[in-house]
Image (tube, rainbow, N blue to C red; front, top):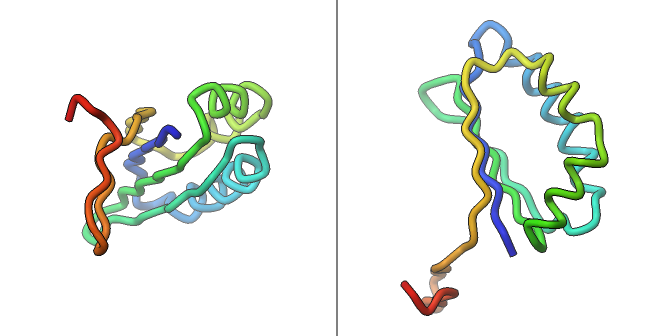
Length: 105
């Protein structure tokens, strides 16, 4: 499993446009093979949004973005800045205990 993390800083005057575009892109991505889960967050004090999505593999994510025109939608979004990273979880914690996914941690 890999985790995609996107941080979007959006022009406050265009938040509604951004949210509309994100919903369109998300609806497409959620139907792609390898998609597991997504969580979309909005900062309390700013027009910053964070998307955290889980994919079966880095290849599944790469195949998904290669097959769609989401880039065209994103290009029209009123985004001031975006940070994107694909990561592998190394530690997972919950109320029942700790699961370490990487022997190097």
